[in-house]
Amino acid sequence: MSEQIIAIGLEGIVVAETDLSLVDGINGHLVYRNHWARDLAIHHTFEEVAHLLWYGALPNKEQLRDLEEKLIAERELPAHVKTAIDCIPHDIDMMSVLRSGVSLLGLTGNDWPPTIEQVISLTAKMPSIVAYRAARLAGREPLVPHKELRHTANYLYMLTGKEPSHAHVRALDAYLILTQEHGMNASTFAARVVSSTRSDLISAITAAIGALKGPLHGGAPSEVTEMVEAIGTKENAEPWLRRALENGERLMGFGHRVYKTTDPRAAALRVVASELSKDDPWFDLATHIEQVALRLLEEYKPGRKLNTNVEFFAAAVMRAVGLPDSLFTPTFAISRVVGWSAHVLEQAANNRIIRPQSNYTGVMPE
Ligand SMILES: CC(C)(COP(=O)(O)OP(=O)(O)OC[C@H]1O[C@@H](n2cnc3c(N)ncnc32)[C@H](O)[C@@H]1OP(=O)(O)O)[C@@H](O)C(=O)NCCC(=O)NCCS
Image (cartoon, rainbow, N blue to C red; front, side):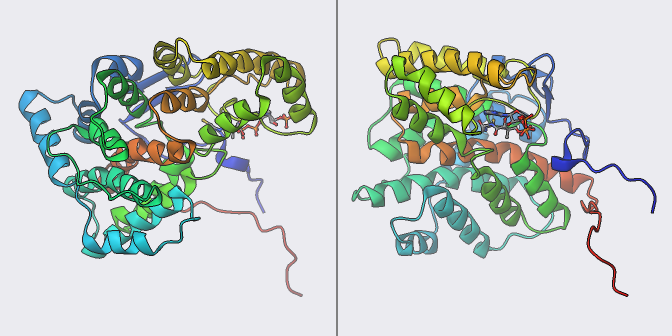
């Protein structure tokens, strides 16, 4: 048999050409279709950037109004989805509820190829699934989606029952924009694999949610806050982190497959979080822990180039706008569905089934 290169974890393997984003891990750049993601997060809204990813360009005023109105019109959940969510035991985690709720949206018929209408409808409904469940868990009557608030503001409104402050909406918008899209990450790849079989959009997104749920991908931010709580004081940071590294544990919120320098999303979110958390002792402790962790990672893992990743400051921003830990990864999914669906549309436009190979290392029959 000829020599084959096995890329464990598919590191360095290019599986698609894409117009959607460039993740430059050497220079620490993130580009969404000819725009710096960082600038989009500062100057634009969730809907504008979704338009850029789905349609190929930032919208003019009319196009923006049209997309905002379509998203508002699609927010309400079908009755069968609400009934099914009500049947899920309360100890089932929110990502599993979201995965199941999204899956049930498929009952209304989603075939291949995926359409932009399906994409908008799904994006509009995902926050409603999370907010509906959160209200039920809190013993509150779930709110009807707001008819005037934009996507991000409506999400916060449905979670809290109050119209959010401008500062909170801007901060969460920045987070949701910076995490909408990120190249061929594990969940996006999962979505593209499923879609490449000509399965429907809902199946592709359900697979992506499953991939995002894992702690090595989207499950990290809630573990960041757990780590900060567990450390508790600045004095305890170094002994706690040393112990973790000596036990071979990974520090959540650090390291990245592609970024070998500062994760540009972490840099941008650091600014957003620090503006919101000026007098917050939690944030002061978290940034102290970050500095100690970076020093110790260099000591224990020299040359691995382990930097702070997006999840560390994602946790800080989501906490600052009042989201509980249990909603961190579901909120990530609510933003990343934009990128997943843009990839699904791109895959469908030039589809070939994704079917790699494996090397058999077992024994041959006699
Ligand atoms: C993101 C991540 C999964 C990338 O994994 P990867 O590209 O496969 O990196 P590897 O597992 O090959 O790690 C390379 C080395 O760095 C170490 N390392 C990587 N991330 C680390 C972390 N967060 N803490 C401690 N050590 C880490 C590994 O143990 C490995 O060490 P070794 O060479 O002694 O075996 C990984 O950095 C990680 O687990 N980070 C923590 C989880 C997290 O924050 N995820 C969110 C990502 S945005």
